[in-house]
Structures are given as C-alpha cells and as structure tokens.
Image (cartoon, rainbow, N blue to C red; front, side, top):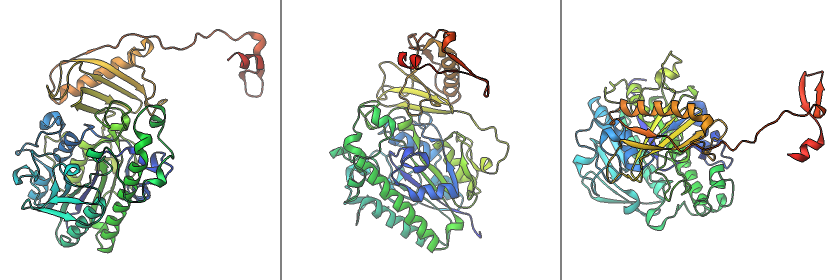
Length: 468
C-alpha cells in the first residue's frame, strides 16, 4: 500500500444487531455483511453508548460520551470547538466528506461552522424531515438543496461511489450516514423500496418482539426491507472499491447509531438501555482487519474513532474515551474492559452497565433530558441474566438471592459514572421480592433408579411426571 489507507464509515440508523444471520436472523437480510464480517473482523458484541440519534452521533464524531460532548439529547448542536474525526483526519492530510444524516446542528441547512470540520458536504441535519424515501433532498457545501434520483439508500450510495472515484488518488475519510432503517417520522412507517415489504411481513420475529406488545406486527416487514436494501448498498460500495482496485487500501466500518425495540420497552423505538436498543451490528474490513475473525470482547461505538485513527497512523486525542481495536486483532496482551457503560438522558435520565452475563440499569425518578443530563439519585430499574435470558424477558431486579450480583453491578456503574465526570450519585435498591422458585423436597427413595453404567441418580416414575 503506497499511501495511508482510506477510511469509510458505513453508518445506518436504528438497526438492531440481530438483523444479521450471524446473530440468528434466518431471513437472509444481510448476506454481504455476514460474508465480509466472517472474512474480515466481526464485532460480535458492539454497543451504542447512547440509544438515541444525536447523542450517539456526537459520540461517534468525538470519541467521547454524550455527557462530555454536551449533546446528551436531540436538538443540542455539537460544540464548534470539539475535536472531531474530521478535524483529526484533515490535520493528517486526508480529504474529508460527509454524506447523509447529521443530526448535530441547530437548523437545516447546516451552517458551515456546525459541520464538525468536514470539507466536502452533502447532508441534512434531520434527513427524515427534509426528504422522502423516493425524494431525497440533501444540502451541498453552499447550502443549496440537491435532489437525488432513486430510492434514498441508493441515491446516497451513488453519491458516495462518485466521491470515492474522484478522490482515489489521495487518502480520504468518508462518513456515509444513512437514515434507514429509521422510521419516516411523519407517517410512522418504515418505507422500504417497492416490493421489499411483502417478503418479510408475517415471518420470523426476534423473541422479544414476539413476547412483548409493540409495533412490530405493523412495522417489521418494512423494517426488514430497508435492512435488505442497505446490505445491497454495502455490497455495491464494496464492488466499487474492488473495481477501482481500492479494496487493499480502504478500511470500511459498518455499524449503527442504536437499535430498535419497536415500542416494547417504552412508547418509542429507542431511548432504552435494553439490548434491542443498545446492541448494534459491527464489522470492519480492509488493511489491518482482514482475517481478524470474531471479536467477542465488548466493544462500544467509542472504540471506533480511535480504531480508525490508529489504522490511518494518526495520533489519537487523549480525550477520546475508547480504545483502538487493533491490538485485539493482533492478539496482543490487552487489558480490555469486561463491561460497557451506556447513558440515556432524554425521555428518562438512566444509566446501565453490561458485562458478558449481566445487565444492570437504573433510572432517576421524575427526571428527563429537558431538565438535566445526569442525576444524584437513581433507583434500580432492571437486572437481566443475559446467559439464560438474552432477550431480557425476565427482570430479576430486587430478587434477594441476587443482591450480591446487583451490588457488584451497582459498584461498576458508579465507577463508570465517576470516571467520566458525572456527579456523585446514590442508587436506591429495588424493593425486595421473592424469587418465585418452588420449594424443593428430597425425592422419595422409591422414585429413584440407580444407573450403574453412568453412576447417576435418575427419577423414572411416570407418577412423578404426572405431578409436575
């Protein structure tokens, strides 16, 4: 490779991690993602730090938590003096471009000083309000509206491919930010391309959407159709790189700002620290990431900015909270965190910490993001055993026999909050409740059969089965 690698962030909006076959989806929505993730690097446990659009995007642009950037809820512009990815790459000699949804400005069109330092601009602050699925309107560097032909995903992909072809002789950093599979707000629908809704309507649903009342029966087919078209766009982008002999010199990151719980956890689609809202797909391909395999470490979107800067050979700002993933790929001895911390400061002021097995969440009573970004008093809201309950259908908070687990998770959470400058807080324990388990008594001797070949105690009496 004769020059620094190009960097592309392929960023979707509101996409659940389990839209991928690598996470159990049987409908073939993401064959390109699934193939590339297996051939290159698959971030198997990838999480957002803020399950809502603007705050999550501020984290991606700066590598800092939303409470640190000041963008803890939608509608707060990114500070103009923030150290952003665009500024870091421009200082490193890169051409920089932003295409699509921004959601970090005060208005549309986005004033130049609110664009985070990007040089080439074709974007909208709140894309869902200025465009339709077949009527894409973005604003150029001069804030003139540009109407693009085709379905919105395809239209933006066309622009990205043209940019790549034009900039191929110098290193570039491209942030390609789609709206899909986010809903189209004013019609409360997930409008896919024509003919893409019907094949997925009435088919497989993730267990949480089957078990909990929400909007999935109405919306799932369209949502899946949007995901399918995004994956096709991802494939087209990779095809373009291949045809231009740029695959070996371009790093491509695929991820999303947050997931979608389809109104099962609250009356929204996100703004919840449950897996459906905070776990997202993640893969990286390109130089340094080929053959990286499945990364099972817990990774957050905060780790993406330092990773792409490291891949480009550029310095990582000290204020970035995440870590580069490259040492993990090199199988180096890395003291990688064994948990991830998530904030929500909009519809509620809540915090959560997740290990590989446990999820622990708290909420501040009576507060939302219109009042403040953090709190000094929280109440335990949930505790999930993800090993036995990966879709979080059995809330264990308050169960007395798990108090030791809740206390450990509370300490982890408070440590995270303190480490990033949140004020001291008290977390009130949930009300104690019984586990609901039945009392067990010794099995009568006459019900026992001793298996000499296996040395095991096995109850065989059909009478016992009839009692259970």
